[in-house]
Length: 370
Image (tube, rainbow, N blue to C red):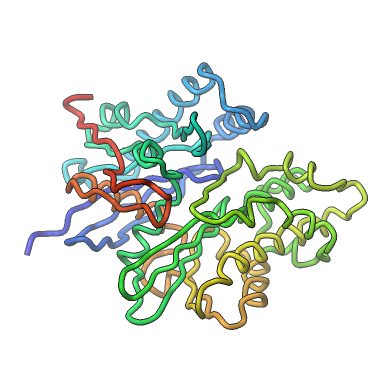
């Protein structure tokens, strides 16, 4: 039997506050998380990304170039320091799978486009390691949404022995995968998870996030506001579908209702209920499910309690119970996708993203050609 190969998986999510980096061993087709770090962005980079996306419009070319250079430097330094901290040489690593930082995602229409910054070719040059990146563009070019891609990994590692299982990722945006024992998989973005909760508490209290959901748990859901938010066409749109902060942001929230006469803490409670309600509605067509939860939202006790209340027939548990730290699932995803791309395996994303055909996800950049 061949020895396991080591990959680095790196993801900067919709929270735009840092990078998750993972050392992943892959034996055959099965990944195993060996080490995980969450490295925060410096405040200047957080502010740059925030300013870039504040308008809700596609960033200008100059902004994209400036942010890309900074992110390449940050990602490359993160990889080098990560390996040094473990006492590993770069020759131990088969490849880096780098998702990059999404700054624009508009996969529908004649000008369909998804932009992830942190040029993988430059990362290959800076680190001296083969780097796989640009994972979403080929899917969009094939008519797909380019997201979510996590269901591909979820099928490989969380496939149930019998019946159906759902995997719920509560990042900035929530997405679900529904996997059956015969290997069929579907998935889509359900709507906001933490993005509105984080943005609202940051604006109101100056906190980066609502730790454990303590602030939302002390509020009262405003049912009229909840109805106004849930009336958004995205929630009733059939899959395949994907979304991002370009759509669900504080501008979207303020357009839906006059918030001036609602207690700020009650708004937070309502946003938590919005996440839970939109997830529950998305899962309603499926049979009784075990639900494995990953992403930062698994640590939000209030949000998890709201989900359990709306899904009493389901068993919710962390992916940790099935072998992968919930904070590391998506970093593992991009290490695994790098492995799949180097193996030349096209991915059939049709039931997930709506792509017309199976495509190779990612582009490969080797340091000697970078």
